[in-house]
Length: 104
Image (cartoon, rainbow, N blue to C red; front, side, top):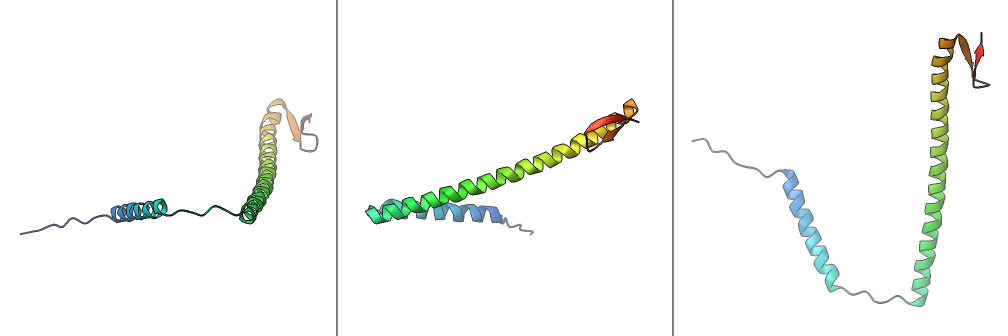
């Protein structure tokens, strides 16, 4: 007699563990009550959020500038490639310094 056993996949175990963790966390958080913040604690939290906002703004500006530079470089490369293909069709050569087709 050949018996086959079914095994639960690892994903089911992980899902059950996650569900148990979420249930336990919800139970704990519902039963706990936080004390209201004092004025000094509230000021410290506001100062922290202000620093976070400044840091995030600086990081966003840096990322935006980097994206602009990357886009400009890619656009320039594509323009040059396009002009290198088009100019010879009309008997001209592409001049990189003037970004124009010049008669040969």
